[in-house]
Image (cartoon, rainbow, N blue to C red; front, side, top):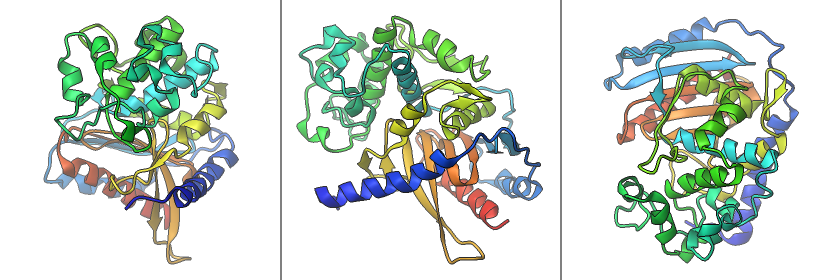
Length: 357
């Protein structure tokens, strides 16, 4: 069922208010030092016996400190993991970093402002805000193999940039959410064009080094561009650093890395997607949001707003402002529906335990 325009606007404003207020009120969390949560660690052992042997890790961080961490099926703390489309959410952070440096002026600008060769194409006329919220107007839909811009076609294109420029317009996609990897790839190209740097080189100085991330692998296309749509491999602990950065509104260990204004803009719901996504209520700039309802002793139910990055197979960075917490799940259940269900079940078990302590 689609929202009427007025109802949808009220819904998005309510969700934005409910979910951003805890984030805005949060003080820096590094000063607090929570102890390891033995009960939570015990809860995580139940997935040792999961019938599917492709779960890799679960990490829970609160007030900037790891309180529970477990690795599965041979995975280790120092192992890199391809978190697939979690990379889209990191690309959004990089676009924000470019904006903070003045290389990009506004999310309202069309793509062609930064990639002049795209002027006149459907891709070039889309605004950055439309690109970041999967409403670019491009005929690209990853759930439809026949779609001109389906991700599999992008992956095999001999000239990815020409492929993007050739995509036709789908006017219905300007107003409606159409999940696709082309727009995240396009966002990465915009960052490269705007900064004059390779996306990975820019990421190293603008994001990874400030967070103390020194080990990663990033897949590239046949033209040599890092894939802004994903295939970025990081450790679970480094994924948690990304989550902590978002939780702390762009600060990391007392240093400003990304502006608070960009974090707020990135997380603000742009479109309701509950009707097409069982695991999310809304979508911002390559970040999802959902309010989970958890039973607690003092009340019947407690709403818990959660922001998250999500990748194929159940890879997640969950950010929970009301608990000052970050939860990372890595999984290799690529293309398997149970991967997403399992990750949400893990999150719910963690939320229930923390809310009932």
